[in-house]
Length: 191
Ligand SMILES: Cc1cc2nc3c(=O)[nH]c(=O)nc-3n(C[C@H](O)[C@H](O)[C@H](O)COP(=O)(O)O)c2cc1C
Image (cartoon, rainbow, N blue to C red; front, side, top):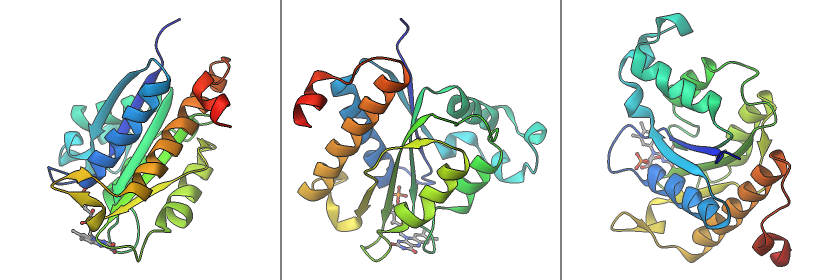
């Protein structure tokens, strides 16, 4: 059996990025439970042509590649910085150009970072409806981290790290189920 493709999409527009760090952390956690072909794609890799494309056929090659990576993944970790109380406009624009059927029944974990804790529930009331539209299999635990949860660019807050562990385990279990495998032993034992 081929290794499942796990794609992390981080909608950061700057590097280094706390959002990317969070996406990578969840990906690393999934990889502890399952053998995956994992990679993280930054939205900036889509290039400035993404914002200029109103339709899919106007997309330049780098942006098309990002969308194709999302559509052909077996599971996704999607992350965005919070801008003005929501995911960024480019994050939404990218998903506006994703085939509406491409994420149906696909396991998806959601993460976001913000300057403070005020917008922590954006993962619940902002991201979930979008991936509900796509009919994705969203993991129960969404992860939000604030500026103070990082030290020198590393995720250090224990509570957020615990949610990363939870979300990664849940994504690994959903991925296994979607591929007709039983959940990894460590996850069933943990209950
Ligand atoms: C245009 C803009 C709008 C922002 N709006 C919010 C906001 O509404 N709420 C919040 O908590 N942080 C807000 N922030 C802060 C970013 O969400 C935060 O710094 C984030 O962690 C950056 O992620 P990154 O390191 O991946 O780029 C905003 C930042 C920018 C540049």
